[in-house]
Amino acid sequence: MTAGRTDARPAAPAAGRAARRRIWLLLAAGVLAGIDIGAKAWAQNALVDAPIEAWPVNLQLAFNPGMAFSFAADAPAGVVITVAGLITAAIAVWAWRSAPTARLPWRAAIAAILGGAVANVIDRAGDSVVTDYLHTGWWPTFNLADVFIVLGGISIVVLSFLGSEHEPAEQPPSD
Image 1 (cartoon, rainbow, N blue to C red):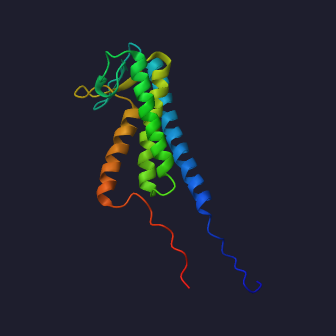
Image 2 (image 1 turned 135 degrees about the vertical axis):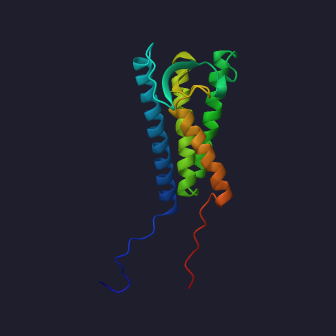
């Protein structure tokens, strides 16, 4: 080793870390969306006229023209798609802006919400309905995207009580 040289890896620049965090958040959201879209494709093929009873959650095919809990089910399809798309776009902007400084649990929760929202918008784009397949008998039929959105939302609420969303700013080394 020469004087002044260390083998320690230099800290990644903030811009590089921000980009990596954004990419990982979007990748996680994409994986979750893909899982739900795959499950919906399976449900549309496997559950037609053949529900599967698997207490406490049965697999039963249903189609929802509205949003959560069939809200706005009677609204024109274009309005529902537009509103769902705008909400998803707002979530994507929030994810993009939050990712560089948000702590990992927050990024995971945001990715779950974004992944679920994207999956439902993609599903709705084809035929103006969302495919649902998880049925309890005491709750409206839902899908994995809905589970991701709800768990992400619950996580955000819990995390907000536990502490700061953002990591502390990096302090320059003191002399």
